[in-house]
Amino acid sequence: MSSTSTTELQTPPEEVIAYELHGNCYLNITWHCTLRCAFCPKFNGDWVIQGYDLRIHREPEVEEILAAIGDPSQYKQIVFCGLGEPTLRLDTLLEVARELKKQNTTIRINTDGLANLVYKEDVTPRLEGLVDLLSISMNAQNEELYKEHCRPKEEGAFEAMLEFAKKAKAHVPDVTLTALDGLPGVDVKACEKICNDAGLKFRRRVYGLVG
Image 1 (cartoon, rainbow, N blue to C red):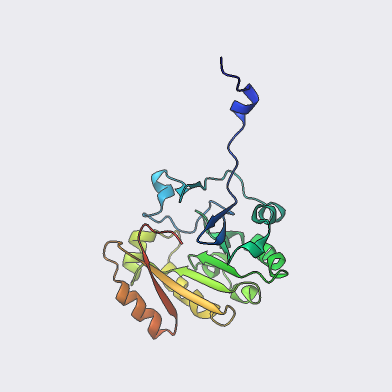
Image 2: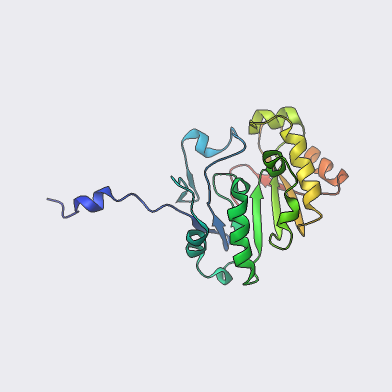
């Protein structure tokens, strides 16, 4: 007979709020998304990224997030990025960032760049002094492909994402747009040209690699 108690069997697995990749600490603060990307693993029933199960059933509070990080000085960056859109919890995100900044921590947000569309106002000034880097998922060179791959819930998302990036430049030192090389129909060079023409930085990402 197994010695495992009934209590142990009923204890749910601990939810992953903070996880380490590439010397950075990534924060998984929500499962909600502005997009329904066809290439996102969670829409195929898989919540595991690099061995971490990122399925959460409630959204952690500021104190829980800070406790999950521990000592931020051991990481190169603290990155808000899970399998949800972190700016959907903007107040919580910025409160965590404010506490981390007291320790001179480098803060990055991996985002779909749709916060202004969601909140119906320009929120980029709120990032100033708290966020050092923004990595914005561009993912396509035109609205048609963007809709096909990212499946936004609101109209005008592609242009809203580009406009968010332009406005964020005034408040965040490093704003970079990214596209996934390997998505059908996506022309990475064309994405890069759009960014160059708008005075925005661009980085090519490889489909299937996290970071």
